Length: 175
Image (cartoon, one colour):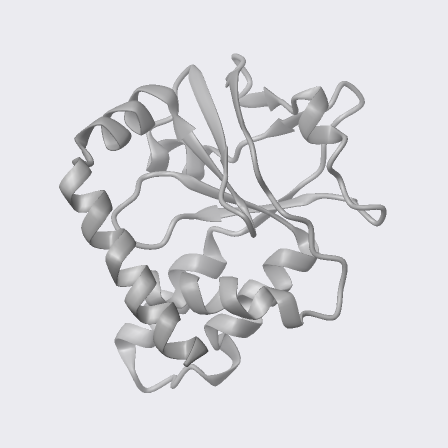
């Protein structure tokens, strides 16, 4: 699954639309109606044509929500190859269905809050304290306790091993 995300990231530079780098991290709270406030310095990064975010469940083992700008989501869907999914391959079709059936367009309200759909809140175990993390082409929305555990459980050895895989992978592409 990670290979799919890396492919999307690598192709982002070739995209036609206005693609915004999604970097930074913010702590916000979920209100009683399931909304989070968009932090002011995140709002400053909105592209000129911004209308809404697209939220969908994460790929892989992470229990978080992906939050895309529309252009970034369109490119993600294109690069992931959903238009070429074989309808007779149940696993491919289930993968496409899982991602797209949970996708929701959410528009900030007049006070810059966005509603996190109930199914995505349940999937990601978000209850109150929320962390928004920029991942270059999209943001991740996490339950704050879950992301802290995730980061703390990653060892230095795992980070170094993954860093070396990146070096090996991308140095071969540049040779």
